[in-house]
Length: 430
Image 1 (spheres, rainbow, N blue to C red):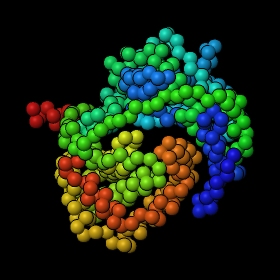
Image 2 (image 1 turned 45 degrees about the horizontal axis):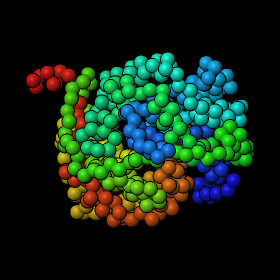
Image 3 (image 1 turned 180 degrees about the vertical axis):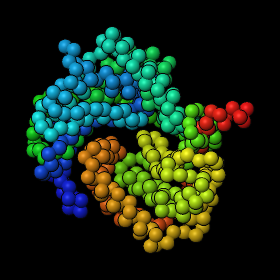
Image 4 (image 1 turned 30 degrees about the horizontal axis):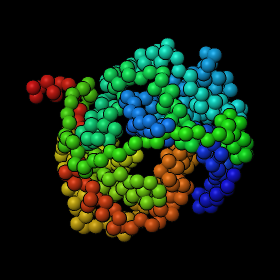
């Protein structure tokens, strides 16, 4: 495996693309008792249109999440979670808009845990009975999300922002769409995307990288197979579908989530640079030490729940802010006004350097988290960027980059806001 050294971060990474197409990345942390491994596919809820073996397919919303649930069963009534527990390890998974990850953490039996991870994720096993049983479980999960203000406010915001991008549909799908999911659809999507050429195995451990490579080769084989070709053309105007959406739920006080629609960042080093510029812009505009944050807090318009940042996924991006407020529209207006002020007056060099040092420091401290580091290495890999190169990207960013981002993005016509009012407030206004 090829070794990469990052002296500035005191990191050591080994990487190789295997004959079957799988990328293996091993971050060696000598002396660490805990080990973690992520086995990730570049396939999420938004990838519902693809071509495979010369045919085009469109699948129901929620397949990626449904598939994640079903992968924890193996033939012979084997319970994957129980097998990991028997090895003294914990295992879990998540589905996002653009990837699905399976991961375990252990302090012993690393090789056996790794082989079990590779086995269960690469083994499709879907029966009519088990798929139907899972449908009821996921239906309950969707119901819980429909009763959870945090989920509702975000899903409403996505629907207000996007006209064509599938982020407008919840990751879990809908109660209607999951009824269309069959064992055959799950099998098809597993064959299309749970393909080594579309996946990454990332390990952080005090382990020999060659042993990780050997395990992957033995469990997955060396054969390259055809994989799904995603059809992901989602044209979007920068104007949201709706500028405002309001509903009422059982919440203690009004809460909001707003976003300014941004152009997709793309892939590669330039994409990561755009993301880091946006993060710095968010910190300058409404971070906890910003002029705006302190003023809104003193006025009682926000509390400690207020915060935000730049969010990006394949095909779209947004600058988001959320929190509790008795007057969320006033908060939105104040953000836009403060952006105009920053654009007009600029950002001082000392403040700019402080922002960069703070952002860089947060990312370096984040490397202490094995889970966070593994996740970021995987996510940035699928964006075509080596995550451990982030310090050099920060060094390239200039003050003008931040001001240009604010000028282009923080505009009223790009903003959508999702508000949830308490039920009694809605009843009184009626």
